[in-house]
Length: 210
Image (tube, rainbow, N blue to C red; front, side, top):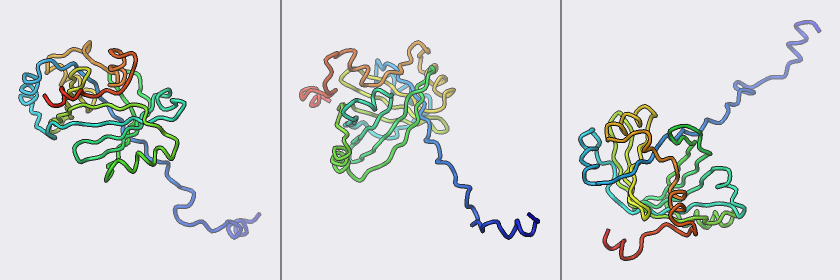
């Protein structure tokens, strides 16, 4: 076909047509847990390292959803609704990647309120697979990452989230070694102590003391 005829035969294409972008990859969460002993000393050390309070200590309530076959948990995924004071957040996480830090794709969305999502989840065939509570105090280091002090019914832990190198430097500065790194979820930690399962919640007496 002559070049002129070929040009006439080509269909008109809109600018940008055929160049659809692939969906952006979700952010990668990088974190570890560390056992927290003396909370007062730990807070003092965080302040010495330049951490500043980011959110006051507050009770968190968490609902973890799954289908009837347990497909989310079996494939290492997580769908969680969290209430922190008056704030509600919906979080989806992908399978964790192997390594000395816990790395997972994560998408987090703020919600105006959570009860509507609980009803929506039931409509979609998702049940409330697990419920857990903890008190969390958040700290942030400018130009660094975030530290979360979690007081739970199964023990106290410090979570460090940020770049891998920052996590290692900060853990070392706090007096920890890599042997102290915990990659297990709170569900896994709780089930080690309570093989029968059940929700991880504070007793009424304990909640009043706190």
